[in-house]
Amino acid sequence: MRFAIAPLLLAVLATGCSSVVTGSGSGTSTSSPARPVTTTERGTTTTAAEPTPPPATVDESAPARYCDRPFTGALGQEMLAVVVETPAGRLNCDQAEAVLVDYYAQRSEPQVGLPPVAIGPMSCNQVPEGSMPQVVCSDGDNLIYSMWQQR
Image (tube, rainbow, N blue to C red; front, side, top):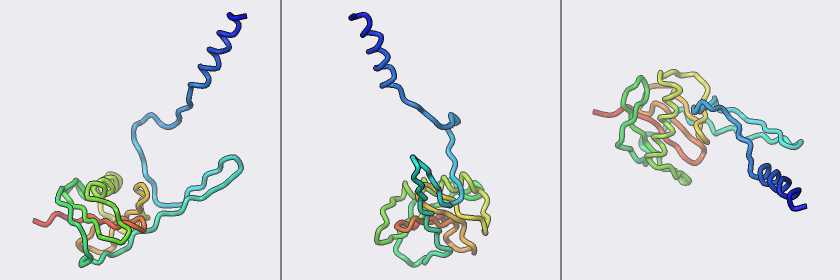
């Protein structure tokens, strides 16, 4: 009797401790243009909200933190991040730079008229007209942009 329980107990432990892992093994992540995502699970359909599109312009006189650590941006050139102070904004320079680096990894050439790119919860796009801000990103609470390094 005791020998019959051991294999059963071993089988229960083995299946109870295993997990299913899914995804690509490539080690790369991709972001796509901002759009709604629909998920169906157990007969329920939910639609994730589309990220707030970034504004086409930024008030350059608004209070902002000008980050001093350059990163590789458009055309492989050094750029700086700017975090515009907003009532609900919580991003710091490191976080703003990370978002902008991800954007430029996908779009290293400045092009206007393309759909926004979703980077995490933020929506980013090239500004339509040349000004200090080059790429603007927003999620409704935070507003950041990239600018050429001023020499």
